[in-house]
Length: 114
Length: 115
Picture 1 (cartoon, rainbow over the protein chains, first blue to last red):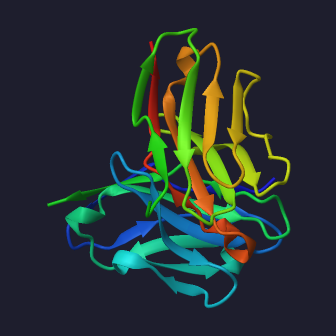
Picture 2: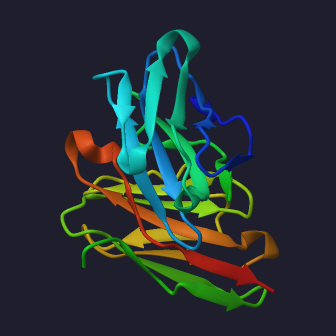
């Protein structure tokens, strides 16, 4: 079965520092991949997606992610963290040719320190 | 409305009572999903509706859980004889048909507390 692993349930960075949130998937066929962000007391919002086009994907709020097939990874990065980036981030995979639903990772809570 | 709406936003209920949660998807979205998010956990898939097809109920944790959808609009998730372990945020999402079915738009969720 398809699975998604997010390394680190909590990540803490200083304002202005690099943000790196890790996501690895298990699949023999590259799936579609997504990052969602959840701000406190809100639903999830799509941050960016990979759907077999360019391997470097740019999303909203300055975030980007790179699909690396050899590493089965889709890590999320942002060069300079802002206080407003504090939220929980979920990686998700949509298995091509599989069931019609997303499989989510357990999430990584990002804290940004002043 | 512009987005997915859910009601109520918060629900506190006593153990053993039944609860009903509502989701209004974005107009035109034929796919609708329910998820459960327990404290500190990821999203747990519950059920998926797609148009007039039979729903995918593979994620429902027990027969106390059921969901209905009227056509391509409102959906209700019902939990009977609630237990404390049912306490969670219940999220609803909807998406367009076709290739964009994987781009899900989420509602704000219903926070259920079973005392």
